[in-house]
Length: 181
Image (cartoon, rainbow, N blue to C red; front, side, top):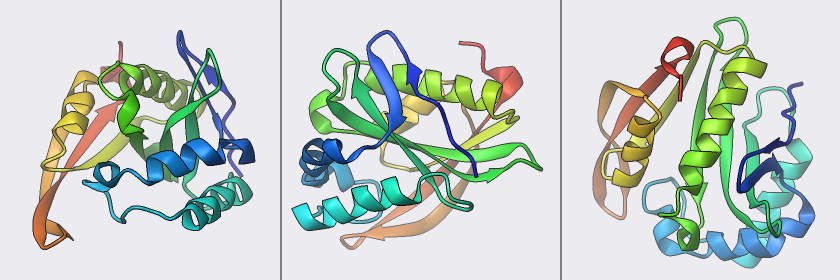
């Protein structure tokens, strides 16, 4: 079982989700454009509750994606999430993902949270490589990955369909020796 400690940055706290996060979680799961470049669609209050409680109940179990809340340090409000999946201690690699409530985008929160998260993964989980997969029209996530020094490693053509639109997925990788921001 893997568990990740709480991480604090200048403005944020990265931590496990708790049941009191439900109202904020429902808010961002109701934002249609939040789901533009990820599988799934807007969630009802009940669906959001079930998803959040599943994150909490299954946190740290073997072969589970670890989902972390991104919370504002000043008031505890959750504004997004980070996740780590496909973690291989043998190969020292994993995949990460991120998502932010639309009301908190364009303020540098995703960059601040991701830097701290990546630093933790490299230095505390002893990973050598982190991967991220991004739909080709998700310009904000592509820019974030590039700011974090991820390198484009490949393009999986026409592999995602959403509302009759076909997308490519871009695969990025970052090696520990390349991450020095």
